[in-house]
Length: 491
Image: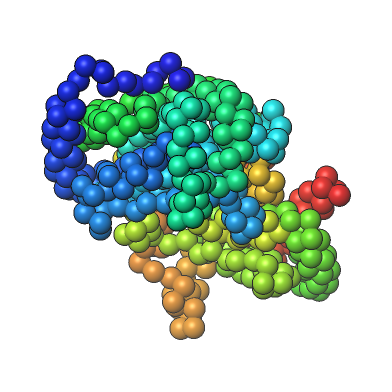
């Protein structure tokens, strides 16, 4: 990749370079307003060698942008808290709202190279990391983000000189970290690692731009690339980002109409089995905490199918310090202005903890699809959600997804009971009745969702919920079995 180094011609007059940079900075100031109006989110990643000028470059760029329109994140090694989440968690949290810039002073690449040099990634884990990065950037691009990546390159000789100057003063020596010194000592090995990583992540969605960092005049190429990329994005020129073919291990799922719904359990039998199951789950919760196994439970289902009561019986067995129930409603304005998975990434549990989603990201292929709230974006969402869940599974999460299933007659009976019982009336809304009128369309969408997103690592379980007691016991049994299997593998 380093052969792609962009060089400003030596014969160029410094005055001409300065004039062009000034003109491009003025152009960037105008583009900032156009970005805001067009609701274009822009991610600018600045990677490069220590002392190559990453911080100075970012400072120079942002002087041309309204401070209300950008954020800058300087990425350090992950904290203990960040280390207990998936690799992409802290980066996905920082993506900008529509119409905003985010500048990363190093990021997911710097962390990956350092992991590689520390032998913290096996060959398999490294290949998986590359796939995660490419998926992340492609998903951002597919969802309307502009991703611009720069690498500031300087030869070892110049790095030596700059480090020597910084270390000569007590006021600047702090800027040369232990990691910088190690990078300098093993410059060739780091260069090889960077070259390989950039080669494997130079994609249509997010191409690399290698910039000569030896002097500020060479920053001209940064302004050329950045303003040109913004102009193209504003003009609607999006890269063709066809993902590499990836086959997900899909499980066979029955159609909803073929599911037998008449299972029942007697009250006495239910109470004794519930008590036993909750006791076992409580013990398993302690064990998964010790083993740092994260757990994600997803609840979807027909209105009035009993999701709330089912979640309550699972949560009753858990230590309240170790789980979170995440109720998902319509997205607010901050959530709507970002990638639709952003709000779910924010609630991914840390290792040893449990997240219970009361509705989830699958709204994209159900209500958003049927109500026409996301155009045709739902069509690619199956792949995006499979990738999302694979990222979580590869991290070590146990993922279980439940569709609570009832028939139309049972739903009508429960709706009527809620409507006619004052203390239950808050549970029924006009929207529930409107959704009921679209039952057949929802059934088509749910069947497709089950067929395309039930994977070996994140399976769907259809829960027969005509008898709520039966449904609660079935979910508890599935969770217990999955946690015992994960613990057996871990221990």
